[in-house]
Image (tube, rainbow, N blue to C red; front, side, top):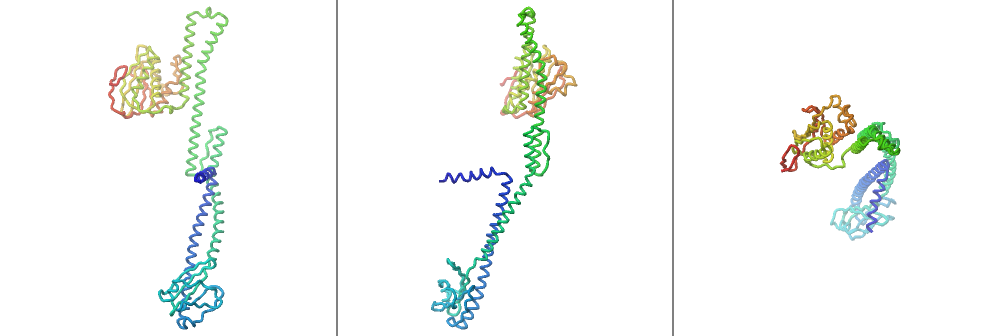
Length: 483
């Protein structure tokens, strides 16, 4: 039996949540006015009832004093009682023996109560009492007079209160209807900017056009909402523009290696179909062509991997943790040595703790070392230094190559940008842009300068963090180890 009763509030809640905001405001306004009118009616009815009763009691006291004075002069048994007027006041005399006298033709009053009898016996001076019966209710005042008492009664009349209540009911209904109309008008006027905002959002969703901002109107919360949506549209525009540029740049960068790869493969297919592969391509040329094909495939694989990483736009899928950046640098240097066995990577690192994403940071350090390895002479090592400077972890990677021209410095971290001198070298032009994105995501800064050896010096500053526990590390020339 209790389960259906518990479902009713949930059903009412679901029904209420499905209503529009305009309907809710209308219902709330009408309900508030109805409650206010009901409370006002209750208070006014009580005040009116008290006022009418107080007036009736005062009148009964005054009439009783007049009748008591007359009865004391003439005697209770002989006093002439005023004739019953047919409505209104009723009188009665209580004799010393407990019997009563009433005017001729007057309706019978309720029997004398025990308390009224005590007044007639002199035990009490006066008494105001009410008697409510199924037919009529009486307000009776008993006053001591001579050896008995006189009573003046008044038929309780609720008609003024009933008339007042009926009038208040009509006024309340009118107020509720008026409140509903006013609430609906206020809701329509107040929610008009929301309606226009909804229409604009629907238009953007249907047309996919993000260029038109929603007009800034209204005030307070509505203005902040419109500004927030405009900011969101601006962010979407920037994201779409960045995706378009990335797609255009990717298509441009993929075109050349794919064309070269296709031509080489088509050449091999035609020679093989003609049966002149061995005669047209000596073993040395065929080996060189196959090596070129392998290099082109490797370059395409690297480019696709970097495009995939860059197109993700963020690295939020990897959790942030407190880590020793020295471990990340050592891991990246190990990978770089396996990829470039002819290039020496010299490490000079100290333990510096940061809060970051280890895989993303290792990718960024690896890209820095790979970039330096392309330019560094075979007999000159790529130097990687990690140290703490104030509240920052500073990573420096420099090479002994030709360095970066001043005109190329502002665009070093741009996507697909490659200096003229680097066109013949392998690479996609995305490595340093990935470094920039990872550093920005960690609240750091990446810069480029000329190293003391004449090559390029790439520097990354990251916010340092307090280590979880004191750690003593032994720094060597090419590796670090925990004591």
